[in-house]
Image (cartoon, rainbow, N blue to C red; front, side):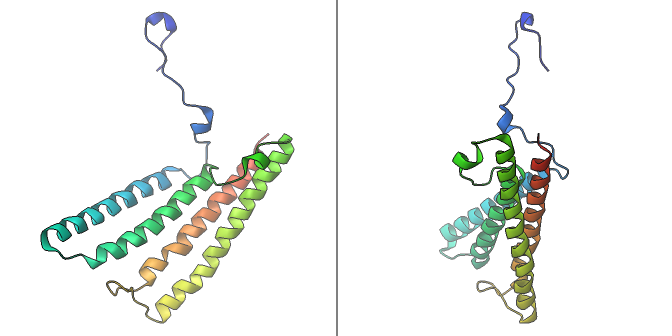
Amino acid sequence: MHLPPESGHAPEAMPPLDEVDEPVKVTLKIEDWLTVIVMGALALFTFANVLVRYFTSQSFAWTEEFSVFLMIVLALVGSSAAIARDRHIRIEYFSGNGSMARRKKLAQLGAAMVAILFGLIAVLSVRLVWDDYRFNETSPGIGIPQWWYSIWLPILSLGMALRAVGLFIRRGRRA
């Protein structure tokens, strides 16, 4: 709610334009909530392990294995959010200078390369999951099926590829 200046109240500050998410078809809250959930689980598992170690001088083996898995998931989900928000790494000297047509083409090229990369990772990691399943690979720490962990790589990679395709389309529409 914005009040007129004569009301004696200062107007609310608007966030800078570069901090406002541009409209997307699939809500960015997916990545935001996944980040919150994964960070919460990571904190709970780690805290539980600290308490058990402190009081019993033993460790939960499963917490270390799950923590590594959750950190990988967190990196992939964070990457998806960065792609969707167009915050992925680039050399600003090249991407921010030049004509608007050049900058638009570079933005589309970057999005296309990200989409191709994560599309390839998604396709190739399906083979990894299949091998883990077919050969009954188990995790080193607690012996659960390895594919329970590896199944998330193609799924999250496909999500990142789709986010990059969406970014490519949005950059193509930009004037």
